[in-house]
Image (tube, rainbow, N blue to C red; front, side, top):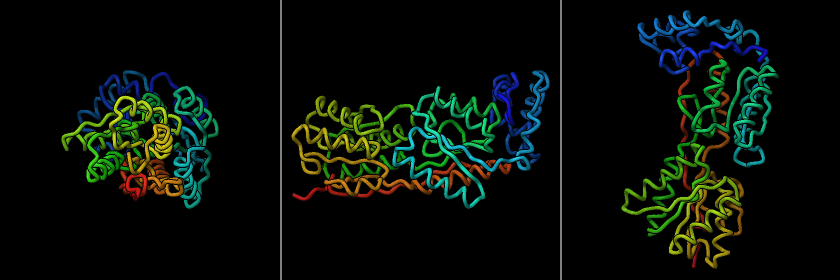
Length: 339
């Protein structure tokens, strides 16, 4: 495509595939400082990368190294749905950090669909953004690999994929915290509303919960669902039909947990008494429900600010490490309703 980003048929990804290396390694060898090259690859590997680049006729983007002096000071942010309170809070953090760094930002919805992701990425690049923050990463990283091959600076937030720089909550630990809480309450037969399998958030949260139960000698019944109240309701109906003896259900976000609460009541059960229900993210809504929801608090605003700061580091030519922030379990009546 036109603009500052590579559109040649021979890209960094082409070289990486030929050399059997990661795109990030090839990028550092061909465009990094001597110190960055030394950290990224051995002399033999670096020589092989340069040899492949020459043999394939690679032409580096002449604008890539001039980003520091040819910036728009504009950052694009892609999320599944900004109407999601979680993503809106993360975006507030991004926007706040942008203001501190003299940057402007805009956000677009991709609805977690790869076709929309690609279209919105192209739209963002047509506005000459300096870089992107992506809150819609899929675990297969196909779209991300394409983006890296175009030499576009980007950072992931909330979700992670492959080895790309990201700022996330330690979602596996968050799932463990809920499982330990359920086990302390004596719940041996439990279910998990696991979310979408393409998102690291749902996978890590449910795996943390399931693994903790397995270590304790119990099995947790899991079912995937969309990250919304309707998905949670349908998933809970399925779980209760398959195993009516369940005494606890963990949903991997608060909106799905709200759907679980509705399904539990439809089944004639009392949340917090007959069956414990917990969510994730501790949105403002969680504490204000008629039955306040036990939930894992993730540092959403901080994730947004740190993602922007990580991107600024990338734009300055650095190779920052991914960050994983600590979760906190907030216990309320949905798991400890008084008799």
